[in-house]
Length: 353
Ligand SMILES: [Zn+2]
Image 1 (cartoon, rainbow, N blue to C red):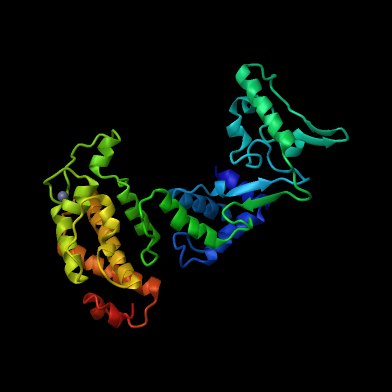
Image 2 (image 1 turned 60 degrees about the vertical axis):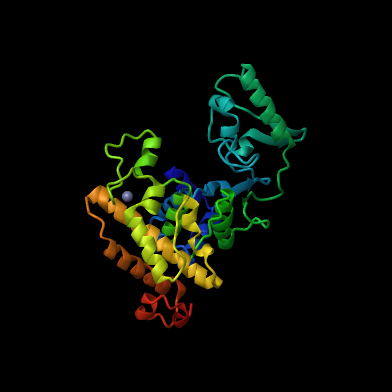
């Protein structure tokens, strides 16, 4: 895996990958989860990291590229995406097994001769079974019908009609496509960090590893009780909704932000608290940021209780929520009059939100 990324980077097909990394890197404010400077000594580390980050967001970065081989035909015949949206080794696994050179280039297999296009396969043994010959027929028909470009091979960024990579297309993909695919009405809030958005997003899909969620996945859990209250089994809905600790947190949030009482009846409610209240878009965004901070703090305290045996301290959790919200506003929204006292009164008007 690693070597493939490194290879891609080095091969300079190349420049496109570099631009991905650089472009995202240069926007580090909105992409803070990409680590520091891209060191020229070891760019593959960052590329690896980048693909991991994307994968964590449910995006396969590699799928965003498609090859358009021209007359050079220097892409890997079996392993790169060009003929279909999947590489040929995945689409035709049986005959790929029979290939003698798994890294053959397109030009090794497809020759444009005087008599037209010819296919040169090289097999360990000839495809014989029905399944194998079916694959071979299907592959051959597709290759014979493919229109190669003129000139150099190209890589195309699939998220833009122009085929040219742009940071915006990545961000849009992350923020809209991925989330709206799930029809969960999850609104990305760029006032809180990506990892926090991600937690909430996973939470409303019930994908946060509470003890009940682990039990569902057949993980043996010795104690399924909620460690925050020790009264009920720990499901996500309990931990973030009905638990005594969560209840006090939501009570605090509704008083502090002067919003309606918060009732969590289903997990999606956790992402929609701000929508149940009237206010400007920016006011709602601030309330949503605060609720995200609350969810983040509840989850962190829960982990502290589970893994470090620390008893939850509700007043400290409240302080932490206030502090996190303040820090996020300060670093991510860049307000000029961000006085702590105004934040403690949730006086958004005075803060200039
Ligand atoms: Zn509880």
